[in-house]
Length: 161
Image 1 (cartoon, rainbow, N blue to C red):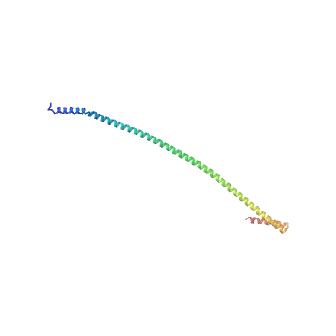
Image 2: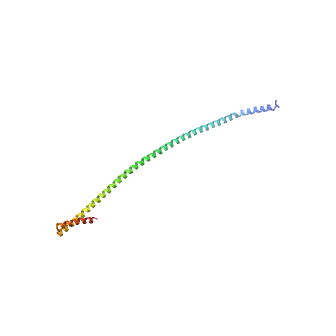
Image 3: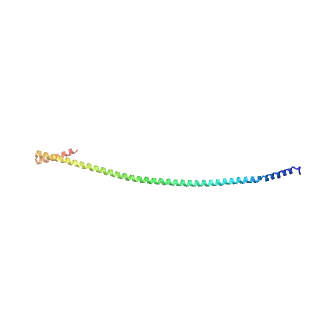
């Protein structure tokens, strides 16, 4: 028995187990494994939380993007409405301005016509006065005075041009 190597291997094995138990090696290994498992569990929990946070941020980003697109559409629609209003106002102002200019041009034309009529009347009066004074100076007879008046009327056309 003491000479049998299997006996000594069994004793060494039992001694090894006794030493491991005495120094609490299995407890340390178990403790280390438990700590490692807890650490892995904490990392998984943190990874799950980070994933949930990332999904929430992504959903928030998508919501903000939709809101931004909606706001951009509203701004474009409002700008089109403002442009239409501005166009209508500009057309109305242009029409008023054109009407005012037309009225001013018509007034100037009327003034020019009145001035031309006044000048024609003044020239006619001057011609009539000249003819009358010539008749008075010359003391002409009726038929001669009629001819002189007719001649003055004919001359009036050349004097107006």
